[in-house]
Image 1 (spheres, rainbow, N blue to C red):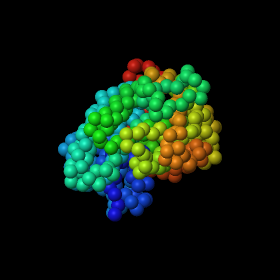
Image 2 (tube, rainbow, N blue to C red; image 1 turned 120 degrees about the vertical axis):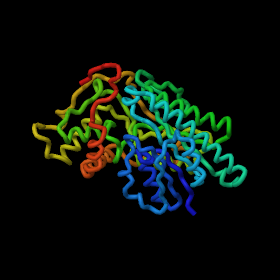
Image 3 (spheres, one colour; image 1 turned 90 degrees about the vertical axis):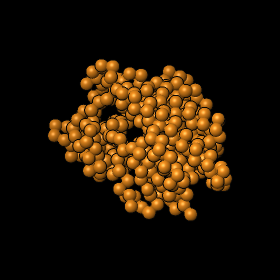
Length: 366
């Protein structure tokens, strides 16, 4: 019989990938809880919406009654907590939703998971022993590696030093999860991942934004000199890691998940332009080369210079390693956005217009 996996934020980028991958296995029934804010997109789940092992609940993780009902009705064997406000620039413009969802929402979810799990201890001890709460976080909680030792990387023991309202709210949620495990015994796990990329990512993020702007002949904004370095992880590799941690990770442990693909932002943008030259040679009017659209803009406040993950622990203990090279993954991602214009065109017809965010301090940057 399939076990039940409750995924929060399952209509988002990583969440929808997790839903599809989990349903492709025979051992999971999936319950997706998503508030459907601006970045939640049910179109990303069109291929599974009628799947017999899939259920969707539109609800806010900060709604205690809704979360309690979800636990009582579906009786999950595991929780994969992905629901979060996640865009740094948006957190600069308006931090309040980040504190509400990432901190208060995580608190509510932990409390309802604890209530449910404590009930299992009395009524179904075997199921209680197998229950897991996996909290997905980010490498941004560790701060900035720029200026540190050459080759330094974040690991599970790196001290927290968040730089933005977003990363501070995620750091707070990580601490809550650890406290609920230490104090109440709730069987939790935490992962901290590097920058994800791949199909169906909301267009405000660097890679899809660059692709969509280039196809429209708009300028390609690059913060500062584009020297910021990120460790890129394909979303399907990330989801494989999450399911591996859920299945075999040790309760109370944290696992850092990275792609071992460090790239400067400017090099990522130029690589996208190179793929577009081959895959979309019919350029917008007036554009000789996609790379000519690159425009360096004022950097955002508090911008971290470098992130990199040491994923040695998850490799040694759980035998996980990334399979998708950045070159292959980026090319396939560009191709997906070219082949699925209807998916992102519907988003651009809504509340997002590829405008720059993160200018709350009054910087012009354009």
